[in-house]
Image 1 (cartoon, rainbow, N blue to C red):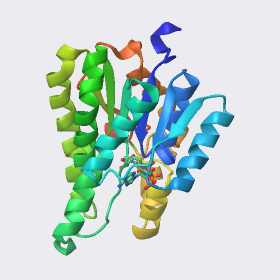
Image 2 (image 1 turned 90 degrees about the vertical axis):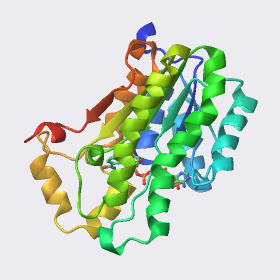
Image 3 (image 1 turned 120 degrees about the horizontal axis):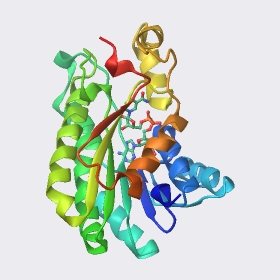
Length: 254
Ligand code: NDP
């Protein structure tokens, strides 16, 4: 179906080497996109590329540290050098430092904000000229339930993810004229390396997520394949500035 066909498209996914990023990468690869896995960890990058290739998809890796401005810009430049185009950018790389706000150092605050929010701005800014030249583009930003809610251990993370939604809306309004759609996905609680660490650090988290999620389960990375394809494909050409929860109903429960 052409509405959901990504053949010939090139998709860069920051943090595409594991977790939610890899779930989205595999979905887009199955829809025909060529995937650029962009993570820091070389072994994880290679494993992710191999997983996509063994599923019949097309993929390669470009190492990136999204905390470095030059690395974000080089990611886009290297993609253009290797593939000659960039159609889809997924700003998915992210991390958290779980602490009470009074215990945060300024350096820790900046690490979280820069990893999650500033990186997405830099990669989007770097991608813009190529997308504008091509007359089309899709940018997908990964928010969180912390884009909507707060938590005592997540001040910097929630600030970054709330900012991600507002940045998404602003980029959407700025670049709609260029045929570029910018949307956000707000994942609920998903079983990945990130939340395995959270479950070790936050007492009762596992049980409270199960209790509060109407679908009565944690999400899995494969739950993001469909929404990623939709937001990357012609099916979403009039959808821009949206923030779509993929959360098993978590954010709908009073
Ligand atoms: P993972 O820890 O599995 O993935 C995080 C990814 O970000 C890794 O691939 C990691 O790559 C990459 N990353 C982190 N810092 C950098 C950096 N400086 N440069 C390059 N890559 C970096 O966790 P998730 O899959 O859960 O997280 C993916 C996104 O989803 C994040 O933005 C997270 O905030 C968001 N999210 C997750 C939820 C969940 O419940 N799991 C809920 C809501 C949002 P590497 O290992 O190579 O550094």
